Length: 314
Image 1 (cartoon, rainbow, N blue to C red):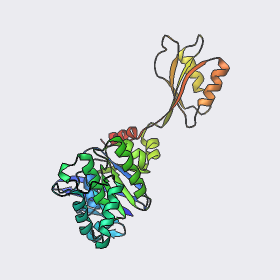
Image 2: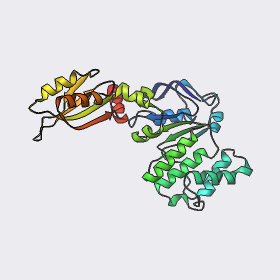
Image 3: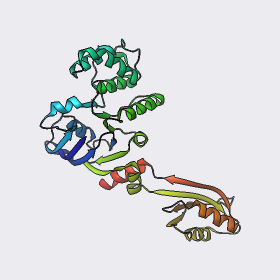
Image 4: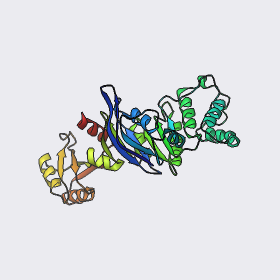
């Protein structure tokens, strides 16, 4: 549904986007993440036809963005970071206006406006003036205008900005439902949000793509992988002896003591292994008469993966 090949955008002597390439399939929710000034918003504006690229090619919903931008705009719903609202209009009047310019058939506009308002949590708010709304409710209206024409592709920039936790959950569920037959690009600074609803993420830094993989793939490739934390106490033992015994277990790649034994004698170790070693640790502890206080599995987070990828670029 979306194919970006070598997209470059220069502003004078400054290159904001540098040969960015990626593809997104139908029904996929792609997280598009990066630090401030990385080129995320510029890339999205190029893909939606609002900004011409200096070089490269982009195809959205079967149409070339640069050769047929109007066809692309008909098939794309775009929520910019600051929604394009008219503060003097009511929500209903604004959405009916957007439905008209988005070429929703006249006989379907009232039904479509009501349907979308209900879906984004604005049911009964038709007469509220846009200028009186909080940031969270303005964000809901912005999402409503992005989907009013039932587009094939959605490009959302910070869609849950300003929403409370309950509203965030509702919008996440709505975006998931939208993606069942659409393509969605979600740009956000909220990495847990990407982890919660995206199957894949592109990380951009300095105008370049520095990582493109599934969420789990990013963690494995640029995060710290999966590690295991164990707390053990052995009668009359010392840390090096325990560490050597743990390192000798099948499949264990590395054992790192995390701190000195406390007054209670328990020692803490970080174990790296491709397969879960906790059963083997428990058997060894039982055989040796060691006490186990904790055995925990720690997976790398998307934040660790993000920082590693961005750090390499810098």
